[in-house]
Length: 214
Image (tube, rainbow, N blue to C red; front, top):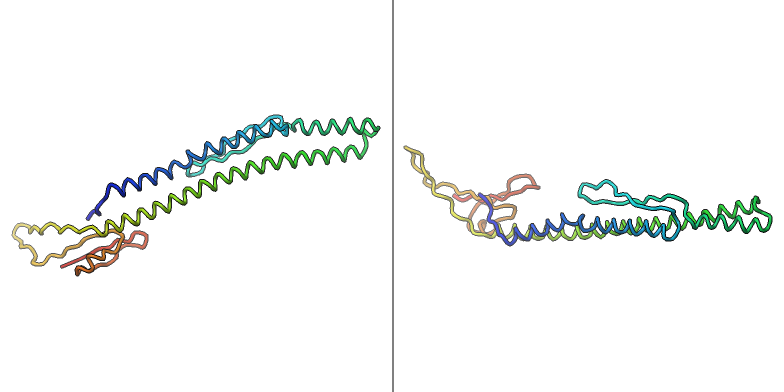
């Protein structure tokens, strides 16, 4: 026996499901904008000569992450090297160990600053994924609550009497035919109180209640 349906509950469930399906379309553009801004920030600050971004392979839900691609050491690093060269050359130490040590220290400082910008991009991208997951979890909980309310509503609806038994030619109808009603995944309390025999059928993941009278 088909369970009763309600247009309001059906529309609410579709609305929630559509919102969940639309999450990648909301957050993917935000991640791409973050990648574009971060790449431009690296070149504008002269920590890379060129920078762009690449979309990664979408996951099973259509979510896309982005990676940054850097080319060239950047003018900041060249300025540091040239400054050291001029300074040590003026003191007659152009080929000195001290000049080499200053170059290595300065290069490491530039690298650390560049890496900090890349880490900030990754942290912000992770934050967008976390925000999306929080939104999905909230909608999933809303869907579960709505589905539970719908199932309870279905179980509370009055059960229509079955069609009378029609005997085959030459046969008489049984005097007391049994009436069996499948009531969905909620315990039909009202039928139980009315004297029906109620039991559960099926595995736990797909449990259905059946009520029998007669």
